[in-house]
Amino acid sequence: MEDGGGSAAVRAADGRGGSVPGAGDLGPVAGRGLLPAGVDSPADLAARLADVGYLTDEGLATAAYLGLRLHRPLFCEGEAGVGKTELAKALAALLDAPLIRLQCYEGIDASQALYDWDFPRQLLHLRAAEAAGVTDVNQLEGELYGRRFLLARPLLAALETTPSVLLVDEVDRADDEFEAFLLEVLSDFSVTVPELGTLRAATPPAVVVTSNRTRDVHDALKRRCYYHWLDHPDFEREVQIVRLRVPAASRRLAEQVTAASQALRRADLLKPPGIAETVDWAQALAALGAGGLDPGTVAATLGAVVKYREDVERVRALDVGALVARAVAGA
Image 1 (cartoon, rainbow, N blue to C red):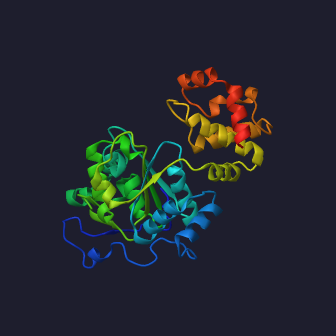
Image 2: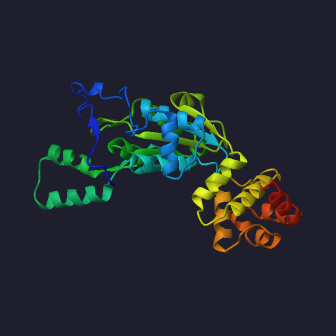
Image 3: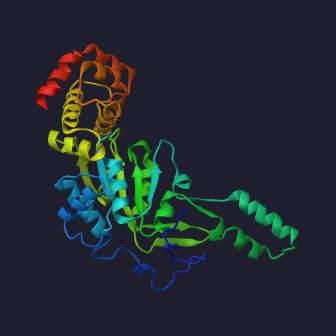
């Protein structure tokens, strides 16, 4: 994994557990934090995010600004498709830093998120040492459990990469034990590898934690972060997002697609369309050369905006012509 110009993790303890002088002083520091040059306010950050294709409101821009400046994780919660993951991608583009993504799921554990040992390479090294007649057991053991055989998973990779953006995506899918483990890592941006000691990030990464709120995340993790709830944008801002992400779409098409998507969100669907689906729908229609909505194109492109069979049937059961007429009139 790319290390952004060299390992930035600092070993705060040796392999025997002894501390290294001064290692405790390597935590986050006050000042500009990870803010790029020229970003001196939330408004500046919002403008720079817009330059890389992400439109944000004042609240989210402020939360992201404080997270970058003070090395605090940003906890973004909201329905699927409202732009939580895209925020992390935009921050990575703005900072010119790699995006390191940890996709959470039920049953994920520390070894899949933090590190693991490269057992095949260790075995090859052991066989090579035996063939070479190495008899020093302590030396061989030290080599087998050296940094060269450690596989950095996303959390450790983010600590070792400066700068970097760590995306912990859909943390609500993980279990309580993993939440507790994640809280420990994010509290001081360090991890302990028994064979190597404690590794601490010289400069903490920018961290974005997302949740679709399929279950409640414990308060302890939220308290460690700046919290922001992302809702669907209002009509005008969603139109701006569509036009920014789909340059081929005319304003008329963007307005009509946005109006139709917002109408579908009120239609009691299993999976209401998010901003991502609005953008996908506009892309599909623009690719077909449509200048606006009509019942035929809506029926033909429903797969871009609704993702469940039951939702497709429900939308088709609606008066699509009336839906389009209302969307056109509203736009």
